[in-house]
Amino acid sequence: MNYRKMFFPIGGGEELEERIYGALLVAKYFKINLEILKCGPKYNPNMYRNLSIPEDLFKKIDEVVDKKYKDESLEFNKLFEKIVKEIDIKISQTPLDSEANVYLKDKKGLRSNIIEQESKFCDLVIAAAPPLGVTTSTFETAVLKSGKSVLMIPRVMKTFSTKSVIIGWNNSPEASRALTTSIDILKEAQRVHIISSEEYVGGTNIINDLLDYLKCHKVDATYEIVKTTKIPGQALLNAALDGNFDLIVAGAYGHRGLKEMMFGGATRYLLEKSTLPIFMSH
Image 1 (cartoon, rainbow, N blue to C red):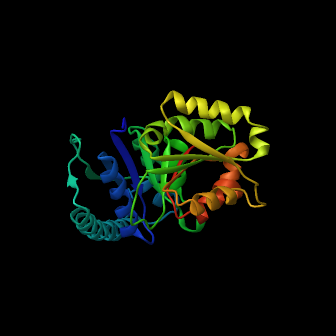
Image 2: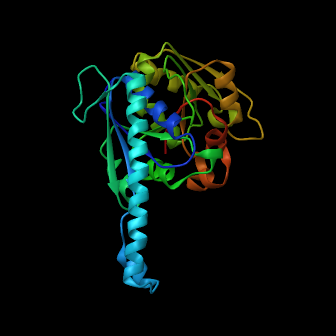
Image 3: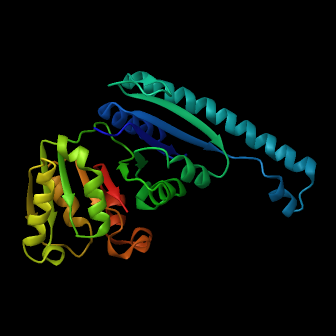
C-alpha cells in the first residue's frame, strides 16, 4: 500500500464520536498516519467594526466565544483520547513503520480555508458522509478543494474492510480517476466486481479494455451489465448491498459536475443512502 498519510477534517454536529471512531478504524486497517483537523473560530475585529458594535462589547463577545470553544475543545480531546484507547492506536505525529498512528491538529480561522490548505498534504482524504446527503462546508471543501481522492465513510461505521470491492463504471473522467487512484486497494482485494449499463459501455469493448487495464495491475475482476433505475445511483448501491461488498469505487459527480452533487443525481443518492464507504474522485 503506497498510502502513507490520510487527512480527516471534522466539524461539529451529531455522531461526533461515531465519525472519529470510523476514521480511526480506517487508519488502523491501512496501518497509516492519520491527521485529524479540528477548526475553531478566529477573532475578526473588522466584522464587528462593520456592524458598528462598540469595542468593549465585541471584546466581551469574543471572550464568550473563546471560552465556549475552549470548553468544547476539552470535551473533544477527552472523547478523542477515549476512542484512541478503545481502538488501541498510537498518538504520534511522526509516521510509524507498519503501524497506525493518529494526531489531532487544532487550528483557528475560517474552516473552509483551513481545510482547503491542509488537505493538500496527504495521500487520501477521509470525509464523513454529510447528514441526510446535504453537503456541509467541511465535506464540500474536502472533496472539491483538496485535489485528492476521497474515502467517504458512513457517519456510523463499526467495521471497515476492503476485501470485497465493487466499481461503478460510467466511462466518465471521474470514474477513470477513481479507478486509477484506488489501484493499490484493488490489488489487495480478494474480490473485485464491476457494474455498468449499456448506455455507458455500448457493448463489450469498453468493458474488455477495462478488464485488460486491471489485469496490467494483476487485478482479476468480474463484471455485470445492469439495468439502470429511474433514480441515478440506485442500481450501484443495490448491487453493492446485495453482493455484500465492503467498499464502493465510483466517480464523484458524473457528467453534470458540481450541479449533480448539489442538486441531485447519482452522487447525491449515494451520499444520502449508502451505508458503505465510498472511494470517490472528481
